[in-house]
Image (cartoon, rainbow, N blue to C red; front, side):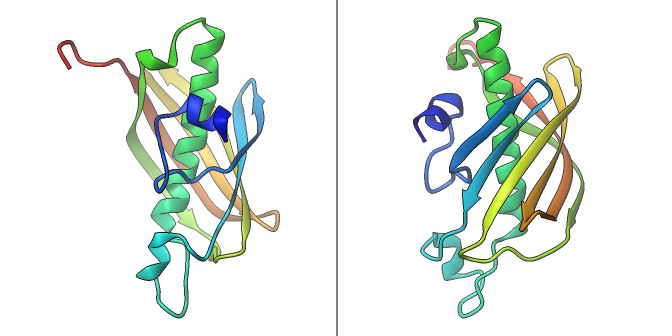
Length: 147
């Protein structure tokens, strides 16, 4: 968990990664155990808790941010110099429900880079089968002057 907290600015209750399994040259793989006591299940849905699709997307975004943070570290730059910001979501497809007790694997792969924008594809796997596929872009932004 410490490596995750050093890599991205997200913190509980808005942290949807438990472990970094692998950082590859072209992407990263993380895992997450979905827990019944998480606050989103109080309203989504009482008596039939289902992990919100938007939070599965967020797990992909956070895995992408971890991958990009590791690339920045390789360049010798400080992670304090940039903040990952979502700039595009494309073609999100939800293929199966994720419920408390499920362990999901989040895989992200780099597609291309244009300036400060990083285009990635991601998938969330449950029992080895896709629960979500998505394409997205993150911008790594430097703090604004005077902020």
